[in-house]
Length: 179
Length: 431
Ligand code: SF4
Ligand code: SF4
Image 1 (cartoon, chains in turn cyan, yellow):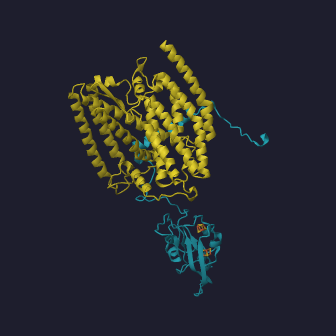
Image 2 (tube, chains in turn red, orange):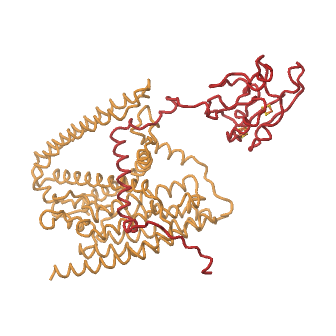
Image 3 (cartoon, chains in turn purple, brown):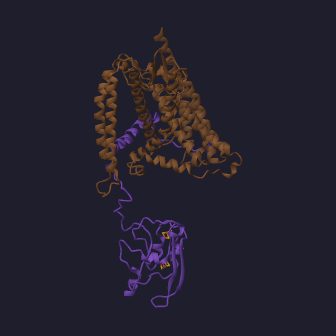
């Protein structure tokens, strides 16, 4: 029995730590300072009055709500390759592919939906996409709805989101096209 | 029983109930607000009735309304023992409430030759009542965990039991030292004892006379009231919510409110035993009576200054950041509150003038002194409640074996030594 017990030596335990009281008083002074300082002037805290004051420091790397990018002619950039859906850890991307008749590409999504209630906003879909067709650079951080269905974003909605930081068009596709 | 006695008893009971029950929403709000301010957040400050937010106290009433209208849910596996499910939180709640009833809020009121205690339960063995009722309250925790048929709940109540074994002994022994010092088990006599001074300049408060017993008692009361750093029975980061895991709606609210009442009672007992109760240092009840005019005049001068600074503070802090265009009606609220405060302080000044003109032995002066002492008591009570709250948001939780070790290895021997030293000193001084 004895040999299975691993005793971990604590280092630097001083006498004043053992009797707790000096450490407790130290801690109480810190919290009391914060408390009294903030009671004296409540607006000295660096906080937002949220719904009225919106955050202004959302950077280009912030993973907000998804959007589907466009080609230069305005059509959908996605080629329905299912890469994003395969990469998605929450399995919340639902794609139905269809033939593309206008000759621009072979396939396009008939339906492209993301269930944002399941999504963990990991950004893997963005990284997986070979066509730069899905991005999370909208800067939108709140989505409000009354029913579950409101959170299932369909293709039209995703296409209507605008990028807050980058150009509207798919870089990958336009890069290919210009060659 | 004369009419006076009936009126005073009823008054004390109503006062005690108000102090205990009305304190709950205030304490719940205070806890969240203080937590926020300590962590540089604002805490709940938005709920309002017609634009009046009173710093956010209204939030607590909104919470109560929500809890009352929640579904009354019983887990299926407890079968037909639903009534036990209601009994468990009730035990905690009722015991916490009863424990508060023996606290004297002011010195005995003289009516003719009779003197009446301002105590909801006018008993002269208050400390014994508080100790026994407080220990029964823990049964609510054990019981709740046991009837839940849930491993987390059971772990929680098991921890509560282990704590109880750890802290009851040092707590009782520290009280024994106090009883030896005061030579009484009556709260009111204890407070009267503390109005003296020792060596002519130190107030003879319990904390000055018995610092060790004070420390032990406060620590053990933190354990008994289930407050951080000893809230291992709840242990929300380890065992969900401990004994409260299966409780919802008003049953949970009973537990929740019971804990705040227990904290309030604990503060009241600590004040009464160690911090001079309803007395200010150097001012015993007799002093208050004999120098009533002087004290009233000082108060009359002091009150406007205090109100002035309070209003200034309110104007500064009941406002939103200047960057915002709308202040959500706070300017209007501040204005109304300012006028209310000024009117109230004027009324108090008038009452003081009236009291100064009365003869010293009149009932009016007696009532005035009583009101003053109740005000002092409430001020101390609030300070101590805030201390409880600040401690909760400062210290990390003890592991439950650490609490036991603290109780048995450190506090118990200290309490025993304290008793011996106290007894020797008392006998030596008495001889
Ligand atoms: S962000 Fe992550 S979880 Fe959300 S859709 Fe993309 S891959 Fe899936
Ligand atoms: S969004 Fe990108 S990865 Fe997903 S199906 Fe369309 S092209 Fe493929």
